[in-house]
Image (cartoon, rainbow, N blue to C red; front, side, top):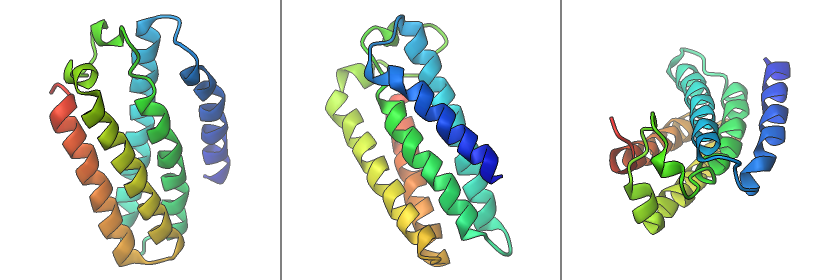
Length: 149
């Protein structure tokens, strides 16, 4: 598991370099953010499974939160101009017309994921569960406002 996580982290770092540069095509930005969102969902699911288990492994939670911490920063950078016109995206136009509100969600997510990491590393199960719930609320709020169903 540790090797797989290390590989994912390394791959994400290598792939992240183009985020700071402009994407060659708007479709590339959309594919990139969809891939990042897939990773976020996978690792959030692993965290959720641990927190619902009889004996949660908070080290495994912290390992998965570390990946969330990296991917949530990458995700928001991939909403580049022109990528709103890409077909097969669930991004609402409001992402581009309400940039300040969208940025608030990004900042709030970064804060809440940091709180989740702190709680998991402190081996505080109750605080970890509460912090994970807060991360979920930020995700839901952003999806409600900025994602097509």
